[in-house]
Image 1 (cartoon, rainbow, N blue to C red):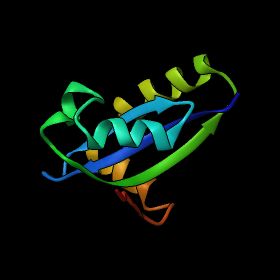
Image 2 (cartoon, rainbow, N blue to C red):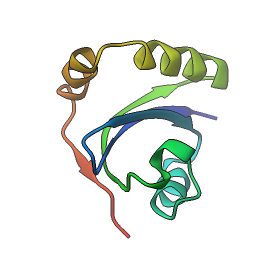
Image 3 (cartoon, rainbow, N blue to C red):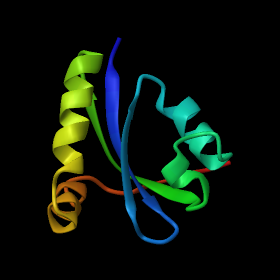
Length: 88
């Protein structure tokens, strides 16, 4: 099973980093307020970055590494991929 590390841009322009093994389901959870506490009132608008990992452990390690980056470094990482809008 592949794990996905993702970065969302929220309505307040803040960035949220998480992991999942089902991105479509997880995005629906965020959209409906059943995802992370952080995104509940920030209405995530767009997936700005995705990265695949082979194991949950690798995804958790990468998530922690991304979360430790400065915002400017996260934006540089995001710039490597075009934005994907959330629908629904």
